[in-house]
Image 1 (cartoon, rainbow, N blue to C red):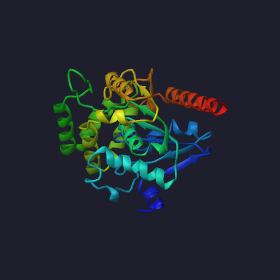
Image 2 (image 1 turned 90 degrees about the horizontal axis):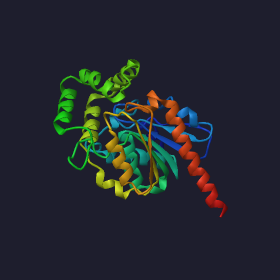
Image 3 (image 1 turned 180 degrees about the vertical axis):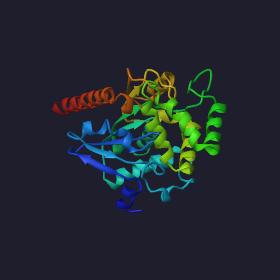
Image 4 (image 1 turned 30 degrees about the vertical axis):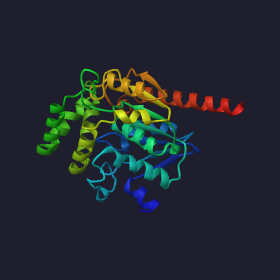
Length: 279
């Protein structure tokens, strides 16, 4: 597959003016449009890269192969392919939810592609492994959700969207997420859901060498505080910020806070790098 085919496959859009690239990786059931309140804030200073994982959004659904996307490494390869196609080096990657985990996996394979990672609502494992690990879900609950996807996809979307989005006083946000679920190919969504919610990448965290910022919402039913704190604790070099934002999608529900924290992190990184150059 040549570079142009990769960019079409993943519906890649590049905007912005800077030489430094920011890659925004969306979460499960979403697409690049979920970054519309955040990404434009970075266009004046950075090259902004938006894309859809294969099977999501306006990606080329014909490229979806269940054997390739049976686990998150297949989605990580999407990011690596895009980086190679655009000849990116030392990029910032901002990943939401499972997009954060996929970003971590990408950085393990090709750390030269990345400078820093921003992980919004990350989880290395969504299943509880008591008493030592809290992921937020029991296996039986997740299997029931997967069965619901098979039996009543629209009903599943209507049930899960408010749980993920939170902010029940703003039902329009949940409705948007529900519609995003319903525009995703059900076969691809089912495969992505299994790869996401039944995965366990806790052992991979020790392999990450790229510094990271973990952004954790204060009331997240999908990736609880314990899950985000675990990712932070296991990474070699990370910072942790507990947000005022609630729910699991602060880039949609609380974009100002999200932009502010990401901007502060990048500014501190760049200030440190400039100081190091002066010595």
